[in-house]
Length: 294
Image 1 (cartoon, rainbow, N blue to C red):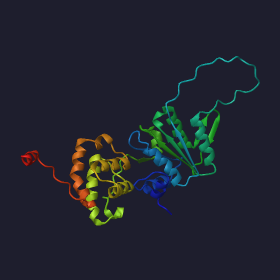
Image 2 (image 1 turned 90 degrees about the horizontal axis):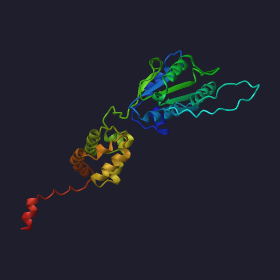
Image 3 (image 1 turned 180 degrees about the horizontal axis):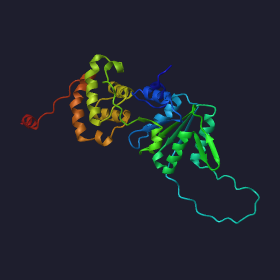
Image 4 (image 1 turned 120 degrees about the horizontal axis):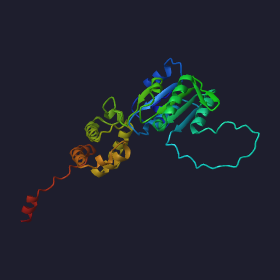
């Protein structure tokens, strides 16, 4: 059976980090409420959304549901309708988007594993945080006269918020930090990329550039940049474009800065030597050019 890391990659989330242990903690914990995962990380980072969506599929859930909280729309204009006599009972008010997704999650979880992602929770009113805490605790979602029950064994809820969530809600959730940068536990070696040992200086030069940019590429991102070095790169400008094109989280302003020019310029001879290119000629000092002309 493929690893969790491989299954996540198959569903669009590539990372060198192994999430097996935190997921084991979440799924094996003896709890008396619905299982809940609180995904924390860099503010505004949609990487958490991609992880949550991939995780639902990687865990083999039959249903992966998604709801995003947004700023509430302005209320519609008030229209006064003529009064009509009717014998019909007024009935329940129509459910809003949150009530509909919660009702669907509860219904589906009665028969099959269901994965519910609630994104941008910081946009929700605090009253919603309280309702969600009650739902996680009791497994019952209430609106109007209805009370819908989520199956404790089948339903897993994921929360994503750019701001701290309600304290009571956080106490019932397992929190996982998923930031923009994930430093690798060990240095990238030539063997990891299927390269000969003479590639080590080149990888050290790449790491110096990545460290300056404050990025931590995955092995797959390393492979793509190294492929370009072998096949496409002839100049520093082309290497810079390959880095920006393949590595997530690169700040383009920093990439184009004069300071990075110096760093990449100091490492460029290492790349040329690895690729077997002849050293670039030393620039001729102005006084030499003047002397030659004389």
